[in-house]
Image 1 (cartoon, rainbow, N blue to C red):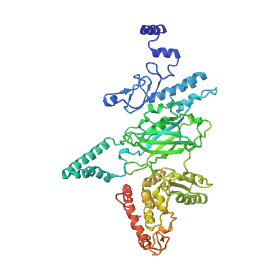
Image 2: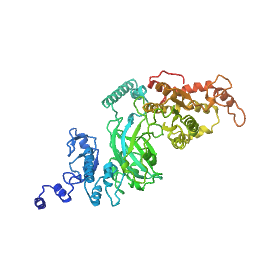
Image 3: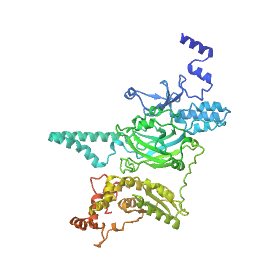
Length: 600
């Protein structure tokens, strides 16, 4: 009876389907994006169900343009599980057409507001939505979101292979590890283990050959945090499949759900977050951007590899909201959990970076607008000095003072490359009347490491041996930043004013020599620890003798003889910097760039 009544209603109305009846009733067929049954298309879907993953013949195509949608590509659907898919291109095309149609016709504020309310929250950061809301003239408030354009990432490491072993060491561990384990059972066990290890190595090489662009499936999460660390808004990117250098070109809307809706991010597949962060992310309050405190809000961008079954976190970038807005389009260095630069797992292990920009139309009216920094003209500065230093404030402040002198008195351009903790210090004193002072991040967080128990114990210890061990490892501790420094110098070769001179600090002599030789740049040291400079004078000591509180003891005499001379420093320094079992050593770094071994 109900079916006959529905057919009668259709025949009276002169239509053939519920969708057509809905279109006729609303009069907005070309403005509402709906499925074949008239349901709004507002659900973003990326993941396939298990039976779809196991079905090799499963295919999906866009019901608007007919183009096939890849198995891991995003598609839009309604909330009623209708078999109706729309690709992202058609969604963008639809709303762009709506904006164009409304901008060329006289529409009432109520009609525009009604249509804007139907736009999914994930699309409110786009330029088209903000152009649509800009057509309203009666001052009514509509839900808004800022749009962050996630463009691309470079040198994303594969999580499953991001250990400290590289090259031959990794291959040896893969093959010999099972053999060593099988040796417990005797020669036959060792032989079986060797076979298993060789097979595992061969399978790994085969998978790598199958995916030359990388085995990682990177995804980016963006969170907006207030001064207390509470999540105001959150969103995430699409999953890039098997991409070491993924290209998204995706607009991420913050917030990506209506205020009070804490389920939207679960629909987006954020369940892969580990360490209890899912609950915090799902509890995002989705507050409108015009209610954020512009000066105290922080934006955290986290990079994950969904191809890993355990901890999927690769690294993150954190910055004040004000810095993100004022910089506009920029590249950001990704850091790992220890604060060091996140490096690729493919030689020569270059640093991972993410490119971001903003949809300027989505920013609240009270916020400043991005101010693009013009590239320096070739004849603007006589010289360009690249200063590289790492450490605490005492390792950075002298370079900053020298940089101000070179800029103010000589008109030079100076780029200071150091740890991100010194960013505020460098920016505070970078305003000069002549020349220019810039900042580049090197990765690392020495100040955080100095707060550890081991570092505090070393600082309080009054023995020549421990002081000599710390001094001999001073350069080896920063080898992980070698490719970061090199990357910055190579990138600045593309600028109108490339680097003319490299200046290094006490802890980066060996790394600076690599950058200098590979880039063919002159090199000069700015050494503020004169006792570390080698000398043939017997009285010139690398470490000053330390007597105990009760006078010189036998141990003090032995330590003074064995651990204060430059000969001891040279010997221990060679062990620390050329250790073949270390994650990084100077010979390995030089070999990465086809440089001959040298005594640095």
